[in-house]
Length: 529
Image (cartoon, rainbow, N blue to C red; front, side):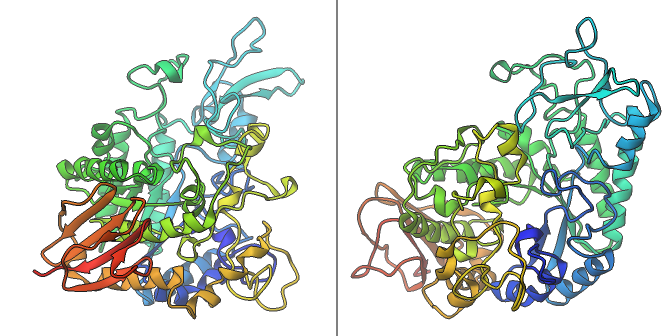
């Protein structure tokens, strides 16, 4: 959950914990069993909260620690668990540790918690190496001495306001274990680990050409990581009940990816291959096969996700000629989009995803069929990816626009009745057709489809744990069975198709056409078993 954009409880235009607590019945009715919160900690918000200034408190714009504890309890009473975001690769430049490092000077214990290094060149005027920030530009920023001269440089794989922590330092390791205990003691059911593959760096800081990557990589997927996650797993397993570890891991090598999911490390990891997959039958099937194959050797639960707070919403992606997602391909020149087609495909993708074996993540607003907002005023944008790229990357604000709850015009009930503050990002007037209140009254809405699908998924034994078997299908069609009595058929061909023999139709993303499944549609069927 991106708290800032979910629901505003105090009328200031910013989503908060009071808003989330008020909407817990909505989430219960939707059918979710856990909420993952993006960082809710005190932060200058240079990167939407991923620049953490204090890992043991709540940012005042969201509420208080007491409110968070109450939310965890209230959610549990409704059968909903809470998962928090841990950001171990970096912290905020306002974090007390970094402020102490700046004042302590070169060679100090305080600076050893980060990556401070002297620069290259005659006067140290060049950064220590050629590493680039993931947000664009150099991954190094130079400090300034008290006399105004240039000092050491510090590493930040993201924004300059997010200095990287040095995981070879014992203070860093002990601190994060204590942070885990802090939140587990307050009842959270698990943690999502941000940038989980980036923590360790090659201490020699070699130059790096991403087009000719060395092995091992100097700052990604280093073997030292696994010792840390084994210690975290042991810590989590020491608590009564389940405490889950979820990794944000972008890796192209399935074998390397699976190492993080061994029985003594993380429980699951986000499936970015499936998220980025284009709307093509062979590619979708290959991604599903690869996902299940990667998880099988370590006995881990596969995960499925279509959108999140970092990527273009899939209603928009699926309405374009090129339906895949790549960060490197994002551009300020926005491609044309057919939102009617994208919505139709998104409905079918929901049934595909929710019938696969494993866990499914739903990003807030996808159950409403929200598209990406691609015409935000430049003055409203806040994402560092936009500013660090000098505007060539549109950034991620378009998938973070506050949700429409009710009413016929912005702010669509986001801040409640009578609130005067505008939402922190403007909502398009076209969302009047997509509000949660309006969709709840319509059987054919996206919200009703998600509610029905989640209800059936929870009640059908075949949709619990268990394998998937592919079924023979015409060209352009993806079909599989679960157990002995369930089938999912997804038609990506250009024409309607005959359904296979079945005993009952459980759910359809679109109305059938004379008993045939239309293009870009999916059905759930009860088989004759």
